[in-house]
Length: 69
Image 1 (cartoon, helix red, strand yellow):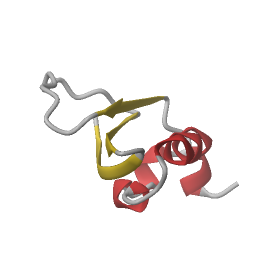
Image 2 (cartoon, one colour):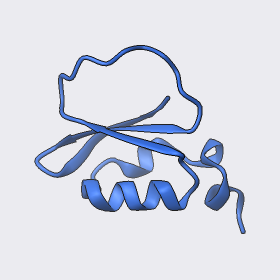
Image 3 (tube, rainbow, N blue to C red):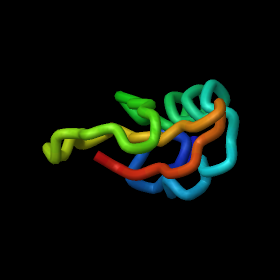
């Protein structure tokens, strides 16, 4: 198993931009992300950092932005 398949720290969130939201979430969980949060653009979020969480900003079913925490 490669590091990217088991460790989200080796995964680049930019890889998810442009993907269908459901496919992005499936890939993220397969790559070891313990939490995947999808939000629409402009959503107000708290600033706490959570290790192992991937945030996906989704509009019209596609990921527009992705970031850790």
